[in-house]
Amino acid sequence: MVAGAARIRVTFQVDADGLLAVTAREQTVGVEASIVVKPSYGLSDDEIAGMLKDSMLHVRDDALRRALKESQTDAQRLIEAVRSAIDTDGELLSVEERSRIEHDVSNLQAALLGDNRRQIMLAMDDLEADTKDFAARRMDKSIRRAFSGRHINELDSEVAAARTGEHA
Image (cartoon, rainbow, N blue to C red):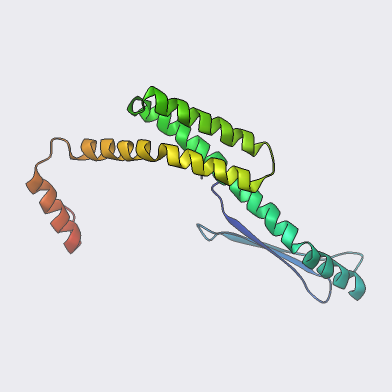
């Protein structure tokens, strides 16, 4: 799995006896693990209530922090994808386009140094907008390569076989 691609949902539950149950589930493949933590010293009802109240007070901050981390991960993934695309098909870019994209990547990297999610999202939007035509040219190149030297009748028979569930 690519770095940063894992989507893990972690659930924490504290029951009336002070037992903490933690479950982690990887969202894309469904692998799940769980553990129950039993305190050796025990927790009073007031301590448990305090922990729950504290978690409720910080739920907004936790959600904002999570959204920031997800945006940072998405931004890193976008930077890696753009760099890989340039390494593979950089000849499809004009000097001006390449310069603009490199500028956008630098701006996004600078945004990642801070903790302003809005700034990260805006920098990602700029990079995505400036790579849109490049992505289309890459797709055209792939399609041309896939269909190069093939006859239309051959493609028709493959499409017909795919529709009926057969393999040509």
